[in-house]
Image (cartoon, rainbow, N blue to C red; front, side, top):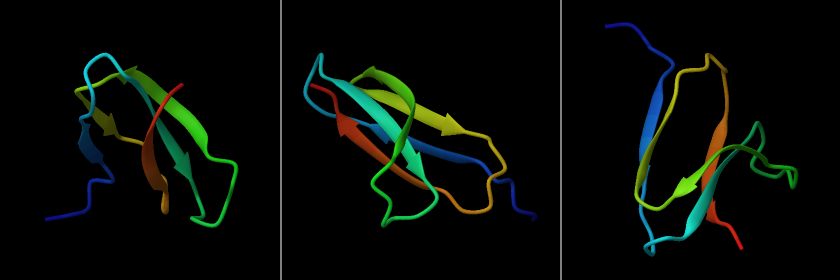
Length: 61
């Protein structure tokens, strides 16, 4: 079975809170880039073929 370079995760949190999924190529970077926003409970899917990418989800103000 080969690698597919796909990632999927679910973001859950307080109802009606908005969240941003952010990416960075280095964990030490402070310039994370938001690539998706939505209200809580959603599933994020990324099909980009990036060799190394870190993800985080954070609540928006």
